[in-house]
Amino acid sequence: MTDDPESIESLPTSPKDAYTARLEEFFDSCADELLGTLFYVVGNLEDARDALQESFLKCWHHRHQLDEIQNLKAWVFRIALNTGRDFRKTAWNRRRTPLHDHTSPEDFPMTSTSESPPEGLIKDEQLQRLRCAVAKLPPEQQEVFLLRQNGDLSYPQIAEAMSIPLGTVKTRMRSAIRQLRESVGDLS
Image 1: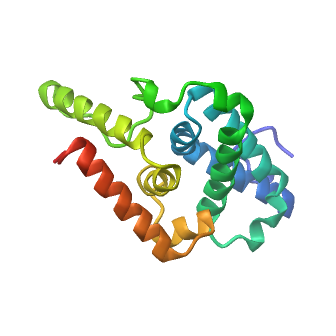
Image 2: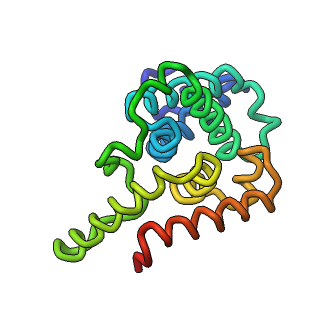
């Protein structure tokens, strides 16, 4: 056995090692999306980070089930949403300031802001208004919107992740978009 990490001998050889590698790769690729989603669900960055860690631990403890999971992304987001909801329900979190009282959730991008400076400034202002409006959505609508926007999940994947019917996902998304349009107007 060689010490070279790129060596073929260092690749996972048992199913458990394959599960570990698959989860690690997935966690690395979606951590920012999950953190952004959890930030909106729990209302503050500290709890979002804690919920993210707890979500990853829950996934890790159930990694032996990966063969049975049809959609890894939906499964991980479902665990994260449930963990976020648990954090939001605790007495400690009820005493904290709600997200809509914060003025800068800009660490969690919803879209790219890589335009030229004048366009970028306008876009930043629009994104700030959108972030505040998203923070004020009812939790059910907020979760559907964030799974679609941050998680890039399809409607069927959102239904699976939230364990709700597809029609409910569509209704919540329509309601969220309607409320966002009323709050911020047309951002195009």
